[in-house]
Length: 229
Image 1 (tube, rainbow, N blue to C red):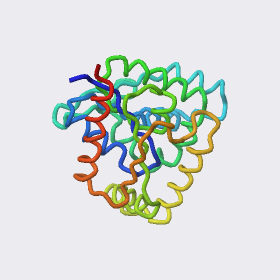
Image 2: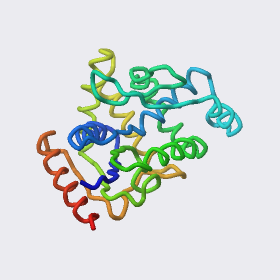
Image 3: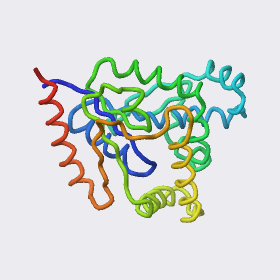
């Protein structure tokens, strides 16, 4: 069966990564978490006190950053490595979440990440989620999905995820963080979050994971059929 590129863009805490991982497993595709790349860069900047408002400082710092995904044999999923160190858990901390949208809005950072992402898509058979995958990274992808959900539901999802790791996190803190990330993502000058013209909107406010996967798998089958000649 012909392999395609599937892009999943959308707002924070819509479940983009969850859906992407499900699809990758179901189709035996490679899953690339573009958000993890920006989170790893943000982590490096925080750890090394890099001023991301300074173009010169950013350009110099990026020379020292090596990113790669390595397969976890237990989970069957790729995990983020920053300069040969597994940082999959560190990049999910709140301190990174609070700054990642700011760092991801920096042109030099996006150019750096997008260049690497484009190289990863050469072989097809890939699912990648993020903010600008269908509009900038892979504008010719065979299937583009734009995910959204009610803000209250997104806040609840994100709160449950973070509360398991940090009992001190508050609902208001999570809501404020999500709203700020939405604003920055949608209003940044470089590659703002927007729906590609040919993307299918997936509002999963009232969908469970099983029903969501069934729906999207039908879209995948339709996309493969449409691009098979």
